[in-house]
Amino acid sequence: MSQTIQVIAGLGNPGAEYEQTRHNAGFWLVDALARKHDETWRHQRRFDADVCKISVAGNEIWLIKPMSFMNCSGGPLRAVLDYYRLPIAGTVVAHDELDLPAGALRLKKAGGHGGHNGLRDIISHCGADFYRLRIGIGHPGVSSAVLGHVLKRPSQKEQGLLDEALDKAVRAVPKMIRKGPGIVMNELNRKPKKAKPVIKPVAASGDDNTKTGDAGSQPRDSSDGNGSD
Image (cartoon, rainbow, N blue to C red; front, side, top):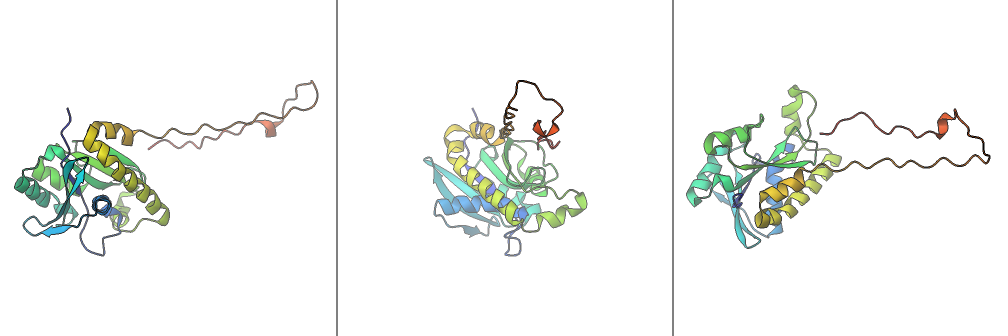
């Protein structure tokens, strides 16, 4: 049986200059949950974190935003977990993910940090036995552009995809609490089915003779050669 979720932590950087940047996608999720439940964040200096509690499906859920900047997220999270005696195994960490296209969502349990410095620091302080909600922000294509990419605002199109993804994640939380992360994991991680191309029948020529060689009557191959993410 999977561990009951008691904590959802969102990763990001504090300050107005970072508020709308891609790297703050984890903050965006927990902010959306707090708004949905009409709860207010409280800054706890002893943890260097913003904290609030919401009630989901009859369960008390802690929302946490480490305020120590992304690369030092582990200390504040560990301090909150230790003080309130909350299990790391019952924690979901929401974070931006370069290796997923903008707006894609994936939920997984445990594993490595995948080069994400926020996760790296959490693993060093808390271990790796927690759930990760990966929020796709897309990759700029070359490693030298990654820093600028994560610290910039998404395009209008990307923001629309991210808003849809965050809404989907917020709506998935009650089911995650009631039925366990495994059920939600299967739903979020399922790739959408690609629509099959509709091939219209060729109109009759008006006589009984079969005509060949008319390239314009043949269906065009709709494949663009792109693979899935």
